[in-house]
Every structure is written in C-alpha cells, then in structure tokens.
Length: 232
Image (cartoon, rainbow, N blue to C red):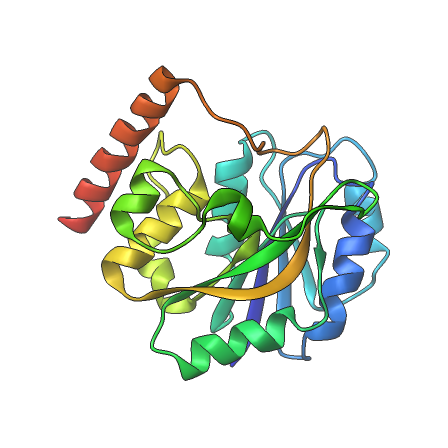
C-alpha cells in the first residue's frame, strides 16, 4: 500500500531539513510527501527544493492558517495510507513500518502512536506524550478533552471522504479527524513511541489549558460540525 505524508509548513527553515531526512529513508519509490506551505517568508521552500526528490510535491496555501494548510495537504494526497506530519518533529526509523502493520493487520481506520516529548535540541522532556496527556480512544473522552494529536496520526485514505472538507470554526484539525474516525470506524492508540515531538517557542500548538469560555465555544462549534456532517 502506498504512503502519503501530509506536511504543512510555515517558516520552518530551522527544522524542516532534519524532519525530511527522518522521513525519506522510510518511503518507497511509490510514496510521496505532500507539502502545503502557508506563505513562508524564510528559506523553508528553498531548503525543500534542495532535496531534489521526486517524492516531494510542494503546494502553496498562503496566509490561510494551519487548519486550512493541513486540509490542503490532505486533499492532494494519493496514497492508501495518509500520515500527518509537523515540520519540526523527527520521525523515528520504524514509524512507517510499525504504523502500517497496525493499519493492515487490525480492523482500524486510524492509528495514533505515542511520542517522546523533546526540546528544540532533542533533549527529552517527557518520555511519553500519552502519559502526559492521558491519551486514549473514546468519543466522549476526546470530545471533552482532545487527546488526538495530528503529528502522531495516520489513517486509511477512505477517511478522506468523511473528513473533507474541514468545517469552518472547528478548534483544530486533529480533534475533527479523530472524532470522525470514531464515528465511522475503529481507532487504535498504540504504545510505540514513533516520533520525537519537539516543543519550542514557535510551535503552532501549545501544551496548556484554554480558558473555559474558549473551550465551551470550541466544543459547541465542534458538536455542530459533527452533527451536520454525520447526518448530511
């Protein structure tokens, strides 16, 4: 089965080379990396072009934000299995093989792997993202407190039909994809730690609690979107 990596970039010159170098050795000639760039003003696209790889395809999605950027990358994938990917992490050498095995040997639509949380220099901060976030499957659990994390997720291409297009006003793409997968199939959180999840001052997402008001608004928007899509 062919692999697509959906990678959203924005001013990622500091880490993008290290990330691509961790991904490419795990891909076969039929696989691809779809990069959607949100209008980087640094050397991100120059560095990507320097890889001279036919497996890397670059799209532009300038100024539309992280959710739209991820959606654009997913929309243009052609692989049987789609991996979501952040620009600043590092994949461990068995990420693709382990994830693919679970998706092929288990009756699941989506797999979420554990991660090692590191700082910008790859110094370990937490040895398990799952333990830190109390991650696990369950629709109600993840509606109340999302533990789906995009950079740890991979899913079968058939999910594209139900998750795309992303609704407006959803809090984040990973919670939307995870909850839709729960509605339409089986989800598996696996114990293997398959990436170094890098935390630094420029991350698009942060490990902190949102205000109660914002959390309630997000949950309302998410509930409306889920109901509309499921009963469409």
